[in-house]
Length: 375
Image (cartoon, rainbow, N blue to C red; front, side, top):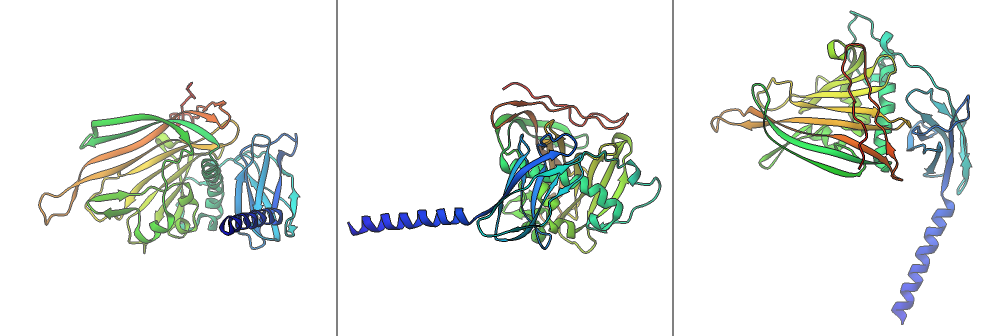
């Protein structure tokens, strides 16, 4: 009886503690609207920023433009909303007491972003640490960052259900002929092609030997947004040519004193709209003989009609290594390519979401021509 009574007492105390925590929690909620029409804005990244300018939490506004942020502790905060195609909106300073719940409406104005004029023809751009340190690079990075942020938050919240085709194939040199291939179709939430531990990338790089296997890691959205990535890479602007005509590239490369296996590549954005189109990257400073730039990958991004962002297709190419003798350095014999593409998207309530065809420039091919297919 005493033990039973003790369990009841402990359970009651636990409930009281939970209720107390809920009562003392501070929250900021509200609606994001378009300033001219008052219409709700879906897919805006709404962030809670403390008095030191640090982001403490972020969510995406829902179809009604609503958001709710949990405040970690009493103090002074601001709420900031960003979305591709809109000027950022910020609240006044909000002094929150313990348990206080505040409503704050954020009004955003649509803006037309043109990046074509950012990159002057024929003028080389210096490679600088952190793109926000350069005025022109900062403008391009700001648009890419908003899309990456929305992609990450949407996946973390499980905002969409995806139907995807996953594939894996072996490509033989010299023409990368497919010698074997497997594929499958899967459905599920939170479609994030890569999950990369940022701290491990800093200390071990983008390639590691694990037993008899070699593991290659890819830069996902949280990695690209992290302080570690920005501090260990320098950035420069390039103008798109050929298939990238009409696009502006934010190129990145590891800093000179970085000795670990790393990645270099480009975030490509539409020069007329500022929309992020795709990331392409290759591996560098690998501990084996290879000058093949085809080791790497690509990630395509698409903005959904309601404003959210998703990864629409992706691939990563890794080497198959062989040694001609025990003392020889390994060489790349063939490539293994893994990836996937989104076949259909539905909301959490089951409504089908169309994926728009997106073309860039007059001469460049469409980079996202998928259409949502019935389940």
